[in-house]
Image 1 (cartoon, rainbow, N blue to C red):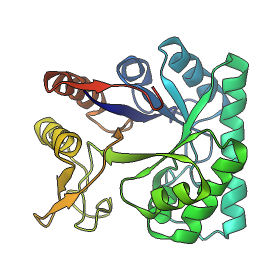
Image 2 (cartoon, rainbow, N blue to C red):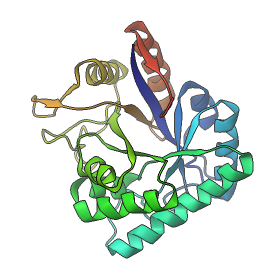
Image 3 (cartoon, helix red, strand yellow):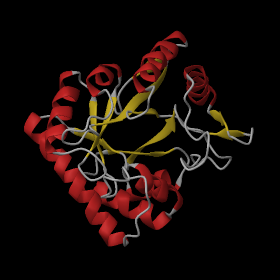
Image 4 (cartoon, rainbow, N blue to C red):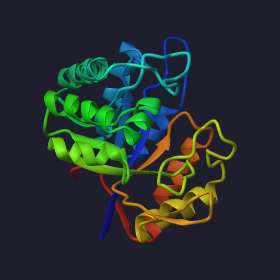
Amino acid sequence: MTKVDLNCDLGESFGNYQIGNDSSIIPLITSANVACGFHAGDPDVMAKTVKLAKAHQVGIGAHPGFNDLQGFGRRNLDMSPEEIYNMVIYQIGALKSFCDVENVPLNHVKPHGALYQMGARNPEIARVIAQAVYDVDPNIHFVGLSNSILIDEAKKVGLKTASEVFADRRYENDGQLVSRKKDGAVIEDTDEALKQVVRMVTEGKVTAITGEDVDISADTICVHGDGAHALEFVEQIRKKLSEVNIDIVKLGG
């Protein structure tokens, strides 16, 4: 039976500001990418999210991003490789401490937002992100954009990799995600999201915005927790994958 992980970016509330529907989504997924306080999240939210993930036996991952709360980590920052390396280690370490307190492993790391996108295009950035993860713990799974430089560099460093595909994003014909600055970058229709997910997992292909088919590897499926239809997407993806005999398991499971 084909297996795939189902992940969601979570723990993105901050102080009195509530983002997403973590308590309803976490029981339905297999991996949670937890914000580490830079692009979103705070110590209280991190602690709560780790406890909730533990209660539902969901794999916990650090989701490090740029220190840009106002831009939600989705704006490019001009940082040196050393600064990026240290920033990633800092955030992984913060979440790992909460995991240690709860006696659960930190299962994976997935860069967030602009950091993720820059790493998918820039070998030097991808290399230092991967090296930071490896230096914290070489046994952590590294989640990156399918068929991108992120995956290539993580493999070179010696990490276990998971190629990620997106239920709620459209693709360019080079396999990169369509920029959120462009109209139609985000998929809002549930049926379209389901069709895209099933085809990526069963056929290894996705239709780009140009209409071309692009080859893609799908180890883990992402739904953005801050999306308007996040809970519905997760519920329907689980149902649809079960119907086509695809088993949903967390990374390493």
